[in-house]
Image 1 (tube, rainbow, N blue to C red):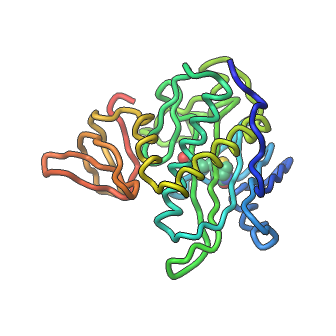
Image 2 (image 1 turned 45 degrees about the vertical axis):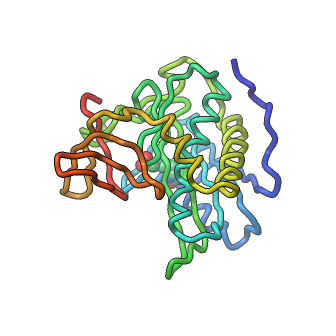
Length: 257
Ligand SMILES: O=C(O)CCCC[C@@H]1SC[C@@H]2NC(=O)N[C@@H]21
């Protein structure tokens, strides 16, 4: 079913595994001054995980929590595109570990869904100023073992799921880190060589609900439209009664999810 253990750790990339931490993103920034190159920081227990838009991210034991600390050379736009690489890498690691029929899909901007429920979230945080990204933390949480309680979530949030709960399959965080680091490295090489175009194509090929109607919400403003895909910067494209809308940042909601 899987080729667990069949990949090698990417050359020149650090690997730090901690028993316990507040947030792997916070730890990545604490470590940053001491790191000479990119590094993955994984924690077996994360006690104050951070989610997008200031939300908390809760990690039941056995779930995956890790951050890739990197220093992208090409500024904030390219840094943001790394979040699509991260989502593709999570998708690929899951397929490699669990087999090609695993029903995983991507939800803009960078969630990974299993059976239509949210199994993984990604949070990018950076330091730097004036268009210069000094350090970028790509934080990745994957519900390998258990989904958080519904009570901890906003009412319209996509139903949280876990790999174990949906499929019965067990994958350890350590095995997942090895698969993820290798997959991320491969997608990043594609990006470095050919730019965002192959990343965009690969992301669209794995996107959930392409062509369906969705709602994009930013603060108090809502846009409802047909999901056409993402543009060359990673922005969401919707066709609405007012025409084509390009949305750089929002939370999206599927009807009936
Ligand atoms: O809201 C989301 O969907 C993003 C969740 C990101 C969670 C991960 S877990 C590892 C890393 N450390 C954090 O504190 N957050 C990210």
